[in-house]
Image (tube, rainbow, N blue to C red; front, side, top):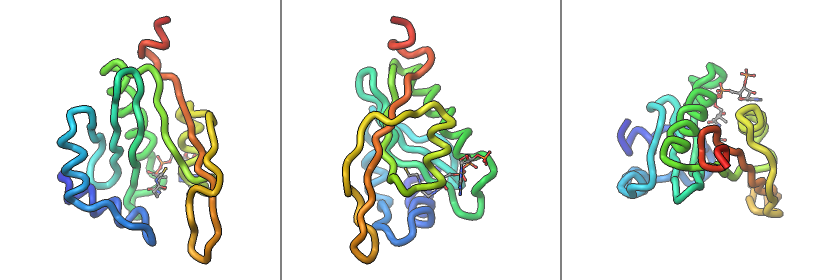
Amino acid sequence: MTPADMAATHGAAFPGQRPWSEAEFAALLDVPLCFATGDRRCFALVRVVADEAELLTLATLPAYRRHGLARAVMHAWMARAASQGAARAFLEVAADNSAALPLYESCGFALCGVRRDYYRREGGAAADALLLACPLPGGRAAES
Ligand SMILES: CC(C)(COP(=O)(O)OP(=O)(O)OC[C@H]1O[C@@H](n2cnc3c(N)ncnc32)[C@H](O)[C@@H]1OP(=O)(O)O)[C@@H](O)C(=O)NCCC(=O)NCCS
């Protein structure tokens, strides 16, 4: 999966939002702390800093949705982050993202914070950003 693949998938998955460019994905992948899992149909981009992992983005091409790809990618990056020493994983999701929220909850994520009116929607409406966290089995927190 190349940065160009990631930019194409991201653009298709987030219509109406500014897509992340190929150059932005390339720059993030250049950071030793960042890694991607998945393929051009569905991928996650993750950053691990010390004992914390952060999901930077997750996207599945519309034609491949509801086939379990995102769930598999979630499990893959969480296992990899734990193997790199991460004890907890974090992510941010819009409160009105009715596809991602049940996915994250089923992967063990729970609410740990709210950023009120964080996202602007077309027409001026706002949506909260929810901060979710999940302990990583095998990570340092699970050992203490
Ligand atoms: C959210 C997203 C990544 C899910 O990808 P996916 O590959 O279709 O997800 P999966 O097939 O692995 O689904 C796993 C679970 O997520 C939930 N889910 C996925 N899509 C859903 C939908 N449209 N409505 C309700 N629940 C949904 C379900 O619980 C599903 O399990 P089930 O199919 O057994 O019911 C995809 O819809 C997407 O790319 N959306 C746009 C980008 C986005 O919102 N990314 C997350 C930003 S935080």
